[in-house]
Image 1: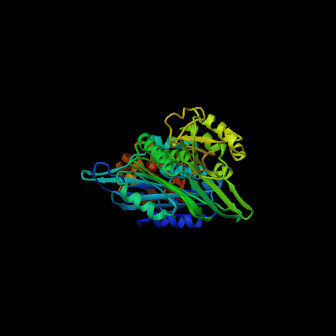
Image 2 (image 1 turned 45 degrees about the vertical axis):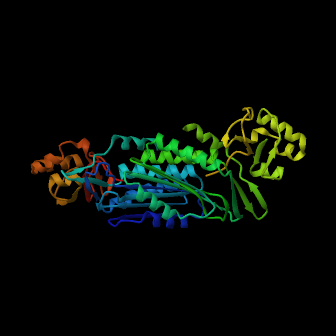
Image 3 (image 1 turned 90 degrees about the vertical axis):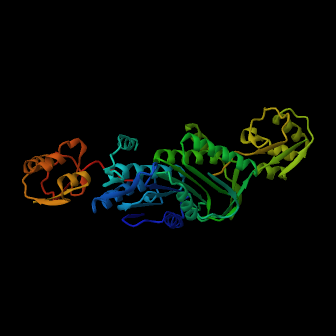
Length: 146
Length: 146
Length: 82
Length: 82
């Protein structure tokens, strides 16, 4: 199990391969990658603020819960903070389990919790100024399924 | 959208990076990788037989359905056939979508269909002989949710 | 004349991956009945149709669909991909 | 004495990321009431508690939990990670 909260970019491919190489008792690996989306070209970048200390503790707790509940053989969370450009990866999770249902469920669970319970705040910087991203009611609701 | 049915190994990391690099309108990328599992060390390898021609058509149809139903920006399926060793990747799917719920759902849908509707047959080769993998009732059942 | 393909343990029990069969069978079920009369290897392979699937011209079908115009029929166990 | 941390637009409205506050407040709600009396920047930041979250010693909590023994309190909007 590995957790990294970092300002630096990460290499999705290298991280995926390293994770798969360790997951030797797993039959199923799921990864999720979140990317700074820029549908209309108006976004200059994204600023991600976090709460050092609490972030790591909150995510580690979420990961422990996922490992136990779905009997994962491994889990990975990487989450960036600081300044990101459109197209850059914000974060990734990876889960490894004997079977696919557990790997998928655990990855979705981790994402739902990271969205609403890990202390990160996103600010979108556009040509006309910057704006904090509002939390979605849907994201809060999606926690209820676990 | 890319589909490859191939005997050669593939590089999960390189494929993930290439897929992410193309997915510039996506905010969410999900990958699933299936690995030859060997929990007790008794497995020598796996032989995967397929139905050339039908395999490609069946998977392309499944991918078209997923692209349309979840408004994916991109999808990828790589599936190997032939001889595989324990720990080797059997197949991967990747989905790209504006939001995570669609990317997750489409990846699970593709997996459920690949499991039960794409013409592949797995044979496990162990020290005491070889045995065809039986289709799971659960896999057939999981199609019902879509 | 129809090409008949066998996969996985169906192929192993019958002992060949494909053959061309001269037949007037109207359905896959009829074709199977003809094959079973030819050799006990077919009887063994087709003993339990519930454990088999059939594809007509590379599309999943059923044992009672008409074979008229079909050029390739395939028999195999439930798929185990992914 | 308690360390008070602010994040995201709460930090921007108050104009600083953290400060140490001399207080006898029993709860976060009481502390907020004290801060609002000090400056209108706090009134602006704490205008709608429903849009805020609070953490006590780096654990999510609520506005009525006791502050006794707590060394660090943080105020922020709902998280938007992932």
